[in-house]
Image 1: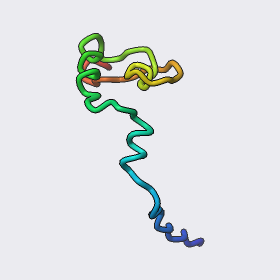
Image 2: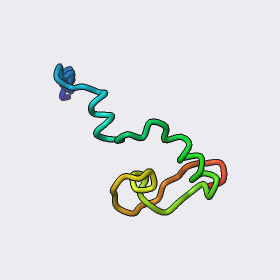
Image 3: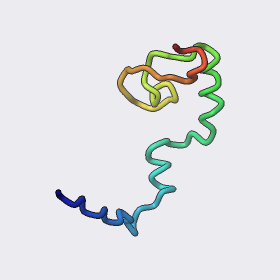
Length: 70
């Protein structure tokens, strides 16, 4: 029987989560207003989440609500 090695702590002292947030999400301070607009159109929308939010991306499907899917 093999023993699974313990995970290393992945803490990176130079990582700045606030800069990472700006890089990933841009200057979208309130994405929830746009999400609510999209959800009002349909619970599932064809398109890339980033692109729907005004960021570049490839087409896919975004599930905005699971209440009407199924």
